[in-house]
Length: 233
Length: 233
DNA sequence: GTCGGCCTATGGTATATACAAGCGCCATGG
DNA sequence: CCATGGCGCTTGTATATACCATAGGCCGAC
Image 1 (cartoon, rainbow over the protein chains, first blue to last red):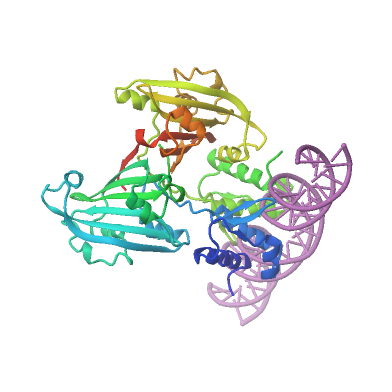
Image 2 (image 1 turned 180 degrees about the vertical axis):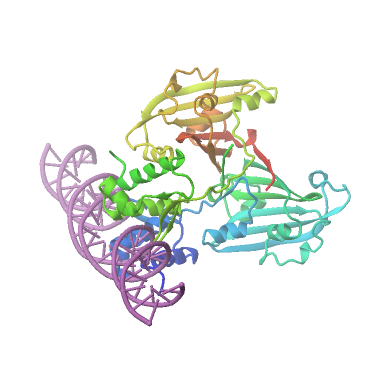
């Protein structure tokens, strides 16, 4: 066993969380309890839990105990990241459910956004992304078939549309508009939220070398998703 | 001296770095050296340096020593704009209503965000910004008085706090977190919206040369505000 | 019933100590 | 000359202990 004790405790706790045995808000064993379970000193347990807390996995309250942090994933305002990678980076489990993936005639609005002919067809994929079993993003994506003719052959439970598009049409530019909206019935059902829960909607257009590759409407439950950006002017 | 020893050591090291006295690659004093300087135990120094290392400020090599980390490039095209200018640019009328502007003791949360002592006081300004008479932003701002001692003397109906801070403490870095939330009663009343109207909340921290200048919570009615960013990766 | 103080469990910090492990230097011996 | 091992420095980890601060429940006094 090469890795130090505190690392083993961290791994133990992270596994409980990512396996869903300890859900957000769950009170985990106290330092003294873990001290007994792992037969190490309290300082070692303290270090493990303190680090997990600073990494955002746990939430500690003096006098009360240590809780599994609420799911408030933070994603980037400035970079386009694949949600699957983001979730994996947090040590969580990602799963995608494909609602549908097909070729359909464009609406006038989408034609304008994708800069394609009004009577052409585009690919449209609708997926729900889950983090540890909780739906965190409804992805409704329109793709210009000229840039990704094989898109519909992809198994989206293994590779996200976003990741595939990065591969076949490297990102040259992006535009995002962020807003808060009440969810429609479709989003409520797929994200398993109530009508009163606000949603964070990101409308994103991405460009490759020679034009608009995709337009995506990403709907997130307000309580489970945040966007973050840090920058120097 | 409210803050713990390890935090003081962290602050000391960060100041040396941000002041440019210790440049990237510089070998900083060893744990034992700092132990003597600060008259604390080695474990305390170890914690301070270990945390700074995990936060990316330092780089440690067993057997060699602790070095100031190389610069990690952060690029972005995002800008912090003064809302008054934004509204003026759209050809609309801006008006600000000052709800209050005073000095008050910090909460623990704000103390941590502003990186000030837990029992100190900070300036707090609460304003509502109107575009053509319609409320579009509730601004709740906490300011470190050290950077803007004369803040409360400003007439905020003529110059926004944000604009004043740009003048007296030039922006070196910023961090924003965006989320969608239901408005609380206070926001509902000031923004004149219903409970079911989602809000877009931007939490923004801004840095000057030598520390966190302000923390602002900006609440916008979802139907009247959007954030947009366009960028190249 | 209500208020206030006490008790206990929790996490937060600080210390002294110990040993492990990585790196560089240098003396010693071939 | 070079190789090797010892030594001293560094950071990395682990422990036992102590005391502080906070939250919440409990119980008695009023």
